[in-house]
Amino acid sequence: MFNKVALLSFFLLSTFSLHAVTISGKISYERIHPIHTGPTSTLNTSNITVEPAKEVQIEAINASGTSVASTHTDTGGNYSLSGLSENINVKIRVSAKMYKNNGWDVKVINNYNNDALYVVEGAYASTGSTNSLRNLTASSNDTGSAPFAILDSVHQAMQKILAVDSSVVFPALKMKWSINNIESGTYYDGTDNIMLQGDQNGDSDEYDHHIVIHEWGHYFENKLSRADNIGGQHGTGEHLDIRVAFGEGFGNALSAIVTDDPIYFDTYNTSGWNMNIESATHETPGWFSEASVQRILYDLYDSNNDGDDTLSLGFKPLYDVLIGAQKTTKAFTSLFSFVTELKNENSSSSDKIDGIVGSENIATIDDIYGSDRLNNVIDIVLPLYSEITVNETFKEVCTSTTYSIPNKLNNHKFVKFTIENQGTYPIRVEQNDGSISDPDFTLFKASPFGELASSTGTSSGIEEKSFSLDAGEYLLDISDSQHRSSACFNVTVGEVTSTGSSSSSSSVGIALPKNILLSLLFILSIAFLPAFLIRKEL
Image (cartoon, rainbow, N blue to C red):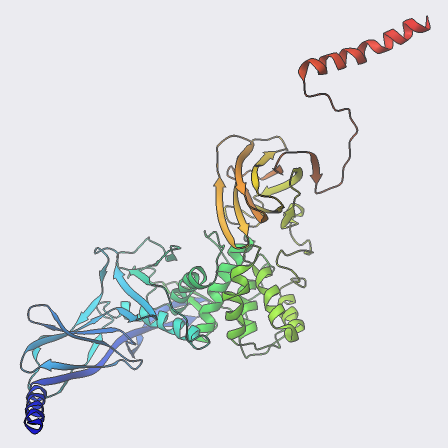
């Protein structure tokens, strides 16, 4: 009986195998490379290479439009779809999607077509009765290759992370690209989306490795590290808010680290641009410069020793700080918090780290708040953080627009304070220098770090709001929504019992009773006392 069952099973399996075939092949895309002529970069349509579409989704679609088999390519673009019925018509569909369970989920979608997933398909053909080979190449002629070029840049960035942390799980990400993205700008929106320009007659970013990875870097900071970057327009020669300088400098440096290519480029149809992240001219270097940040980070990483760069840490020490101490720092994320923690974790390299930082005209960094800065900026910029005592008024917290607005150096001023006992505390920011401004503030808990609330009323010259606060450390971000050239404020947390100031001062006076009647009697007594004494003498 057993032999009959075994024979029947063998017969059924053999019959099934005779009616199942495999389709395999290779999926590729065409990449257009840039050409750099001095500081100008454009796409060179005479330099197109065929690259593998790495780890993308593959499906066999039958005549009814149903997926009958699916898999994904390997890192060489190869795929194999097995178990297909023989002699049925199917086409191969390649989706611009990379998915791995508990790994990643990245797709390129058309934001001008209801966020439809980009696909490339072959023609319908019979599976036949034997295994067959079907290759597909996404062409650059009809922009079919663009979504796969974008995915390739993201894949390269993820592999850099995975090389130092194989356990990392990347949250879902949507790359929104269209040839109609003409004035959309290229940016990460702070959630799950990256928007990419696709203007085929102007600025298109699908083949710009560094641009795509820069924006992916903002996603990485937001999802796996921490980014306090307030965004906005920025340039390498500008005096930026320290949070912006670090965030944008990091994005630039990461693109060079991932590609091991320091030539950062952005191609336009005829007049794109490029810069050398490692060796560009030092234009207004300092702790407020994204160019200084990008050079420092890249020099810490790379193996090319030059000038004050005698250190090659590689990527892992930088990554460890980004996902660790930088993520939990009590200060706002900046070059100060990053370098302080990098030195703490790599103490044997502190002197060499200081040397790289010092080459950007930045004094030794020893704390996360950027204390003891050299005064190479306007006076009212420093200190970067003012520390106030609860129930005191702190004077002379001043914002300015010397370096433009709205995300430039000193548009925002930072105040730190400590609450000893849980309770309700009024926070008051009041202008003290005359001309009308409109102060706003945002309150943050320093540990665990997080934004708690904002106060953005429209009352001229004053902003006040009460909060229930637990014991702990806090930060205030104070700004002037009127963008006056200079505005100075008194800052109070709690009920005022005394006055503190950035400069020492003292005063002498008489405190009057709070009761109005008693105050009047007190004043009258003082007024008539001399007359009474004179009368007594007479």
